Length: 298
Image 1 (cartoon, rainbow, N blue to C red):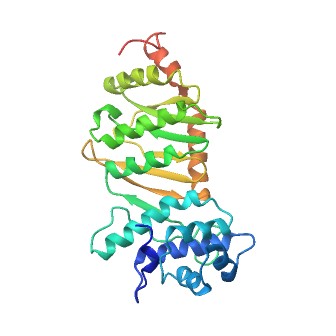
Image 2 (image 1 turned 45 degrees about the horizontal axis):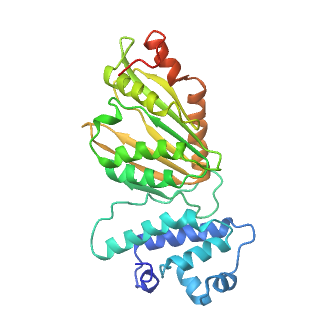
């Protein structure tokens, strides 16, 4: 699959091919010493005309060219692997007249943008797509994961395997024996009515506390949730990617999008930290609710 994309060269390049080219141009533009096309060609082992075609969107690069380009611009190619795979899949689906499951949002300029600065976002149509993508990013996290869970129903009442795997991935990553400094912080919204916590969510929270209290790199705080609706849920992975989830209607319905941009991430990180600072740890919350017994059986 990785040897074919370099051959795509049509009179009207696919939309996703043009989007990926724009992302590469923005990466090059943000490089302190913007490499020339000749320098990029040497690093990529190709001709200058090939580099020009890639940057103009007339040709979609294979992965080896993409990795060499990204490295020449001073970034870690591994952080572009998923982005390249998404674009490759979207172009292939489009060539067959199929609707791609991941659709990029329009490009947007930020407050410090110059020219055609990018904000590349990707939609996930349903529960499975969203959780599969979030779990894949969580497995590759380097140091920090911040997540929220503010829904009317506990995770155990959702049927997709992808959502269950996502929750396991977060705990497994936090508990993994690693020399890296790792941190997972989760905000859990527990619905309340007339001052009483929802029974199902409280039961899940007790079990979750038992399952996670031995993991030194994992913390959970409780947000007492009084709205009769799900909250906006997010997953912030390292300093690079934000996942935002939207739910409503049926219990299983969930979709969302992700954005890989440090500036975009900083806004949500500040919001998360503000929420976190005012909340009680899960163990302390359960001790209060259960009359001093945080380990009360489910």
